[in-house]
Length: 451
Image (tube, rainbow, N blue to C red; front, side):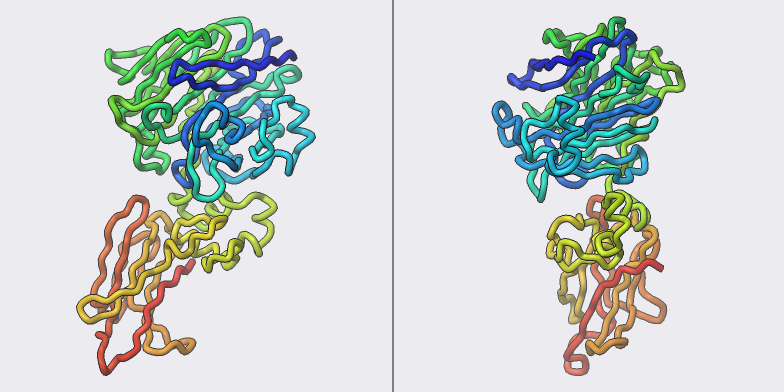
């Protein structure tokens, strides 16, 4: 197998994307993906992914500081996390590529250009995989997420589909999706840009009217689309993978071997989260739906074990001092069960940002907090007391299995209010006893319990 480096210039603000193509492949196939977009913690993380069949030897990498010579404000210290498709189980995590698998990554010949950039390499069974590139801490900025098939010389591996998820903005912060068709024969593919469909995976804030523009490595616009079925497009419908929202975009094209850039932006000046993919239609049907391989955001996971599996790698999951319910690895006062309850990141010191807030209304003490309706295995319980002795607390309100907060049996809180706030609900509960001479000291607290 002979590899060569190709700098593909995108006709968009002078930006450049680096990708590695492979020659020596007879039957054409999808062999690499490079995705450029802004990334941030949480739901705004940049994701690039693949549906492989059968197994494949794949290199994943995330670039930030090595791009600073031509992209401003890049993420200076990205982190890479490889998750299983669909469920989003964390398979491996890497911060600096030399810290683990240095020899294996270097042997591929396409290691990152900066030691602070992550990379993960391995042989993976048939299925979907999602590689997250996120900034360390709370920073945000442009980054690249990439993946390469490194097994094409010795095995019949094939990428059935490639996909990406990111927030598409305006100007140079649109989503850029660069892929390579290697081989000697043309390949028939379906390219999609999905917005509203992201709700099926638990994401809000979607780019509801995305547009597609497909550009060749010679900077020739091959095709473009706004609304996929306007005019009617029975050929796309016949694939069984047509977008479910009329405002999403799609192209069904036959491409000669080479590199192609898909530019995804919102109609007009609209912005939001978007999902883009390219699906090999020359492979045997049924075709995979890459959207089903996108893991849901951690804030939408319904059980604590599912959250643990998505947050901690296999070694960490085996160590209860790191992944257990009471563990507080970053020392911010929140054990993992509370991190799960509030939707915070157990790798960040962010306890103060979600701590319940004490207040007063109508002469009653109040407590305000956020709860996640998706946490169906949790009970959020508000308790009150006039002394801090152990065992003196009385439960006055609770929310079980995602239900609305309500008074506990035999209790009459002065107020219970709930206001939607994205994936969460803002809750305020008032005490059952008014503050005054008869109750000079009243204390309220919140407990998260797994029944």
